[in-house]
Length: 341
Image 1 (cartoon, rainbow, N blue to C red):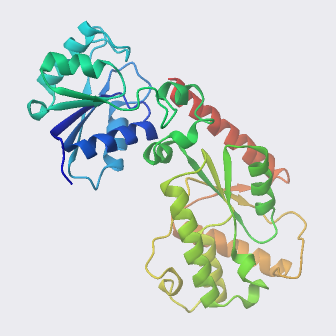
Image 2 (image 1 turned 90 degrees about the horizontal axis):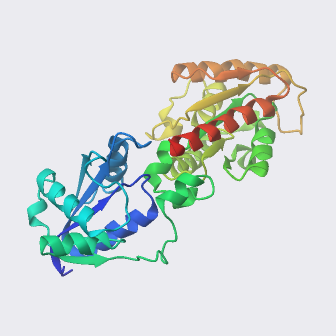
């Protein structure tokens, strides 16, 4: 592919990094052989410079022609506003020339604001304005910071991974796990439930074959890997996880090797674990273990979590849904504070 320019320059705060920014960088990469992306920050901003640089590097880790650099500036000396004016643009151009490695090779500046024209004219290079009216992706960092829940889907996957909370609801059979997850997903738009698919593939628990468990592990692994990579909402509730599947496997087939069902894949883990205690009436629909076996499985599950270095918070309250509800609502408040500064 022929490029019109040698090196493109993009300047931004990326606070936070969103899909509009990614589209801008991708546009610049189509115009120039290489792109220098400068993340600019000052100490008074809520999202640290290092975090923004990490997001950019994660997003373009396989793109050798995109160079990510971060700079910290003094807002008393340089205008922090993105509102374009000639004097501020010239001051920024002089500063960037001093601090950015490879700046001298730049022959085009790309952005969505008029300041790119001012900087380009001052430096004697070309400029390209991309989607200034924001019709292609109608989003801004200001909008996201004002309501991160509403505009969650516009965040870059890298930024989502920073702020999303993955919560595993675990425990023995018939302890209210699925009911809790379904209830909270239905009540809150910021909650997504990853369902437990074992019961869709298995009749009675005690006749679950190792081949079926291998299939369950693979399906769960794919589902969890997808939501860990690009969380669909700020709160992701796991109705089960790989560790529970491993526990069933070791419980039913204690002499068999773990790799038989993992097939070498890593065990994916959440950030928070709630273990629902087996102290509510067992609802046997004909597919469950006996109460005695369910209690034995409870002990086995906890042992399996301990072997993975995980200590779940054990919930004995019969109002277990309310315990989880309070936790996720607190997490949402923390998310809003993180963006508000």
